[in-house]
Length: 124
Image 1 (cartoon, helix red, strand yellow):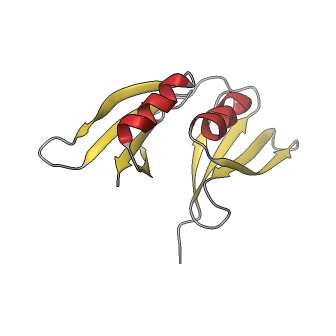
Image 2 (spheres, rainbow, N blue to C red):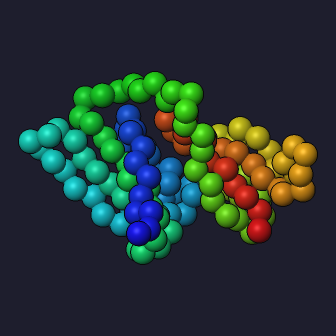
């Protein structure tokens, strides 16, 4: 067994694809419309194999409650401060600047996607 993907419901598919592709550097791997179900699925990731993100757009839905159970997506980066700078330069939102984790030494940072989902950068 292996993890295939994590699904996120998004309110503006084009805006979300642009964030994950243009800001975070992922690739759009595939995209399919399902007119009978009134939804579109777009898969993004850094590689064709391995865990990816499924962005689900339910046609006509423009708001979701994120809930308190959701935590974040984690991405390994070479330099968390640099990654935050690139996100900011491309119009993204930095939630927590790069720095050591509380009670630890791992350098991390947090950014948010257009729907408010948190993405954690963990420095190698």
